[in-house]
Length: 278
Image 1 (spheres, rainbow, N blue to C red):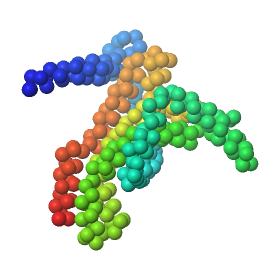
Image 2: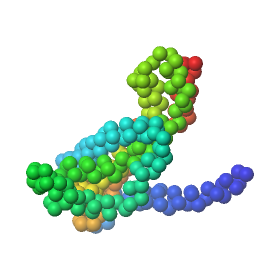
Image 3: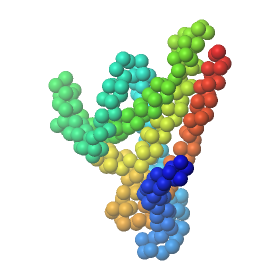
Image 4: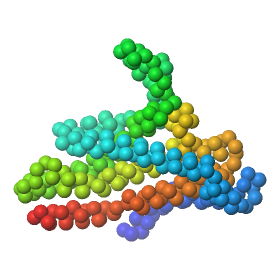
């Protein structure tokens, strides 16, 4: 049986080695070379001493934090209501459905919606406000990024809420807790595992956005993802682009460590809560 499991794991291990580990090692290797192919540490020195790159880093973290916060504030109530609805699987499928559409197509759709002659400005003209510059603003960037990331926040929160045993809620009510106390002391603490997973799924990709910053933000929003694109495709400074990529990878691992929680621990926490109420 063990030999069969090992045999089945070979394609997975090959995939991880070829398409995850090898590209990361290649980026790390390339980060130690200048445009002339000479080994150097100047790329890292320049990144940590340049005000431009530090500002890009702060911008990336700031906008990723805003996107994650807005997404969480929208997704948690949505997931909470979904769990209590009758046809929750149908509604969940409708929320996930936009993720099947190509990201570039959705981006161009929003360009048409937010453009001067788009649907939003036509509505504003009808109500007497007049056309506004919506595209290429921080608002449009945050709106589109939040819209794209919402399903990835709702899914883990929905799953965490769905796994909560109804007996815990009944026990809380039997002990005299009202709806708010039940939510604060039982539902929300147990669902934190899903919240942390959702933060990982949203915050980490948001750190390296570059397509939305260019097409929706009009390059007004400059992030590390934008800098990587510029170095690889425009300036051809692959060493510096790889250096920024390494910094992003380290930052992503840091976020994963901060928000990581073992499933076993989450189950144990839920069991302890149940035992206390029993």
